[in-house]
Image (cartoon, rainbow, N blue to C red):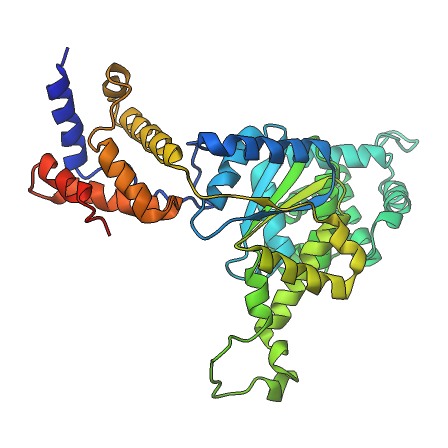
Length: 409
């Protein structure tokens, strides 16, 4: 069994091999992370979960400064919401084909087997188990389609899109000659003219009314609830109005009528309208993140101009605060523990569970004071310190002395 000093050297050897425990640690919606939330945020997390479990349709704003860990909160929610489809999208760039991209995210989350199950149950509800008289006793597909349209028509505005979606769903279940093309269409595949013609269609799910119709069918008939987490929501505001103090060589008002009707602002307004339309989907809970209450109020004022009643779907905002000092200590230790587990050296942590090695409490306190508890800034400095440990020829004690003396930034 290695003595403590030998174990510390082995730990350093792992680091010297180029492994930084905090490298690329900033959370994204695409890269899963499972570190969980720090202690002071558990009440906030639980209150959001209670809201999700207790309500069907709402928009819940989460307010947090840049770097406070809003995307990290998404992964903590996703890990806790076992009985929900939890989807992340970012409005860092205004979504083109918004409904199509969102539908693709839901399909990826649910999987093809769940899609098939939902489609099968829909068809059964429309009468697909009833059979024609005759030798083969096949289902009457036209009768099923008529039943479906009669049942669903009151729930959908675009009747043409509804009719075509019903035709694809029933073809998938009841027409063996069109099953393959129908499934490709339902999965959001890009269809050429030949495949669309075989289904008697003009459009695939890139057409927004078709994608919205399928989203509504999918979400409302899933056995799981659905949560949509929209990050960077205030970007819609910046795209709706020109930047102050910028000089335009070309004035877009010559083409678009006014400065606020640029292609970007038009796309932003369309995206906002599409997001608001999602409220019509039963059982869809929407969480949005913004950097300030001012941004939230500006969003609400824009919505109020369109439809006062839509503002009522907004729940009271919750605030994601900066780390407290104890949070930094907890985050650091959990991160080191995860790193040691990944390099198969967890015995170091288990033998000495209270250690902050290779750093110490003084360095960690210094980090907290230099960052005011901002998680992203904390991670940046931790990356810098560990890069020093990994690549510097100096002894660890010398490196730590530098960061103990407030030479962090």
